[in-house]
Length: 195
Image 1 (cartoon, rainbow, N blue to C red):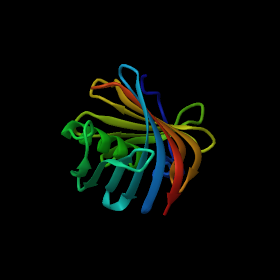
Image 2 (cartoon, rainbow, N blue to C red; image 1 turned 90 degrees about the horizontal axis):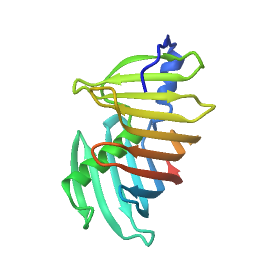
Image 3 (tube, rainbow, N blue to C red; image 1 turned 90 degrees about the vertical axis):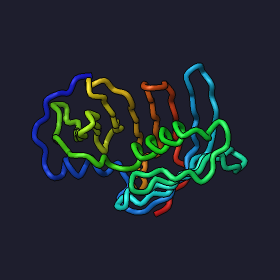
């Protein structure tokens, strides 16, 4: 998908791209339905606490019975694994999961390159990192939102679809589709949230 030309946006347009992320400390519980390459399917619970200003996250994956399969924190860019049982115990899994959680709940921590509206009124914000990765947030409060991560060649490597209503910056329904390096899809339904 190529980037469309944007009409220079207003301050309101800029703020709109941040409304899909929680602004203050929060906690949420999600039902997670995972589909992994090869058709493996499972349902888990995810509990996440976030402090957006500190860019810190604390995440747990649990069975429906409440057994903790994985627990980790993201603080200052460092991942601290508190608990991980097989097959959730690899460093690659920890990095991937915490990257997904940060991608979902924290605005990009890199330079904002452009923001505005496309011809159809879609709000768009684009961030670009020094590593060649870019993030694009697109949508509007009267419709769903998408967050796209692109590699240095402009190919979408990760996509999130958010559907409202939004409660304290949290979408009621989310879908993460990861294309590279390994393909998987997560469907998430918000069960509860608290400030």
